[in-house]
Image 1 (tube, rainbow, N blue to C red):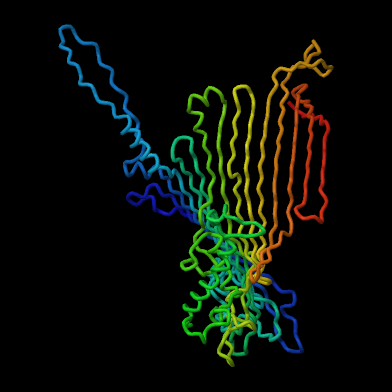
Image 2 (image 1 turned 45 degrees about the vertical axis):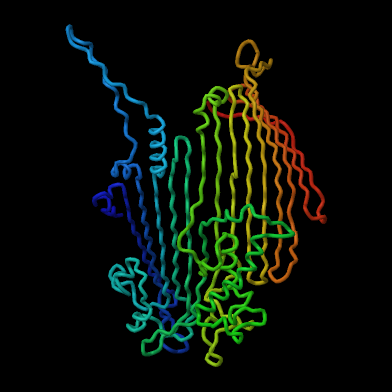
Length: 558
C-alpha cells in the first residue's frame, strides 16, 4: 500500500489517494512432464501462472477545498455585550445598522449551491492474470529465475515469444493447452451533495469490463512461437442516462424512440462509410435501399450506435459509434426532509420525507472476437454474405435497463400515530438481438399506498399476562398496503411494422397485518394477503391467491 503525496502539494490538501498492489505466482508440475511421446523425447512441460491487482482510491474532501478558497461556511461571531457605564462616563449611541436580510439570504443560497458537493470518491480496480502451459524449466530459486522476475511479481508483459526463443516452451506440435490472459477493470465513483439543508443527493456511477484472451500455440524447432486461433471474449456494463426517452410514447402501436432508432440507421451508416473512405454521393457505392455498401440497414456496426443514440436521446450525427463508452454517467438518489422545518408540518407531523431514485445501465452480456475480421486476399474485402463489413467483435445482444426506484416516494407520520407511504415505481428493459434484429421491450409501472396506525394501550384479559391482575396492556400495530402493477412485453420488428404485445400482467395486491405483544417475548400477528393477476394476452387465465392466518412468534432471550 502506498499513500500518494498529492495532499502535500500546495492547495491539494483536500485530496487523499491510496494505491495498493498485490501479486501472485504459481508453478504447477505436470504429472506427465517427462512422458515420452511417439518414441520421441518430447516434454509437455509444466504450467505457470501469475496474477496482479491494482487498486486506486481517491477521495476529495470538498469542505476542506472550500475552506482553502475561503468560500466555506463561517461561524457568525457573537456580539459583545456592553459593559455597564462607569459613573460620569458619557454614553454614545451606536448608529443603527440597516438590515440586509434579503441580500444575505440570496448570498447564503448562492454559497450553498456553490458548495453543494460535500464529498467525492473515485475507485479504480484492475485485476489481471496469465496462464502459460507447456513451460519446461523447473521452479528455480524460490520461483524467481524463470521466466523472469517481473512475471513472478505479477507483470503482464508478453513473455511468449521470448520464452520460446530461450527454449522454455514445449516443442510438441500437437500440444493443445491454451495460453490464457484475463483482464477485469472496474471504475466507480460516488458523490454526496447537499444543495440546501435537508436536501441530499447521492450520486453514483460505474463501469465494468471483463475480457479473456485465449490461444493455442506451437513452437518451431528454431524457437519461433506460432499463435494458433487467437480468441477473446468478455462482457461489459456501464451506468448511463435514458431519461430523455423515459416518458415518451411507447406502446404496442407506436414508439417514438423506436422510430428514431430506425431513422438513425442511415445517418450512422453514412458516417461509418465516410470515415472508411467511401464516397456516399456516388450511386455506385449505394445499395438499392440507399444505404452505403458495407454498412447495410441490419449491420451490427450500424444498429448498435443507432440504438444507443435513439434511446439515450442523442443526436445520431454526433453520437459515438464505438461499442464501449469510456466514462460512466451518473445515477442518483434524492431525499428531502426539509418540510419539517415549516411550522405547519412541525405541528402536525412527527416525520415527513420525499424521495426519488434513478438508475440506468447499458450492458453487453457477451462479446467475442470475430475470426472473420480479416481482408479476403481474393476479393480484397472483409464482407459477409449480406455485403456488410465484418465487425471487430461479434455481439449477440445488448440491453438497456432503467429503474425509477422510486419515481417518487412520500412518507410521513402524523402526531396522531397515522403512518402514510405513497410509492410510485417505473422500470423498463430494452434488449436488442443482432441475431434476428428484434427489440424486446419490457416495462412496468407500480403504485403502492401504505397506511399504518397504532392503537395505544389496548387491554386484554389473558393468562399470558405478566401482571398479577391478569390483564395485558399493549399497542395494536395495524399496517396495510395496496399496490397495483402493470407489466408489458412488446416485441418490435425493425424491418416492418408489426409490433406484438407478447406478454405481461396486471397485478393487484392487498396486504394487511396487525400485531399485538402479550409479553416482551410473545407476539401474535394476524395477516391477510390477497393477490390477483390477469395476463394481458387471452391465452392465460386470471389467478387469485388469498393467504390469511394467525402467527404466534416467541423470541428466546431477554
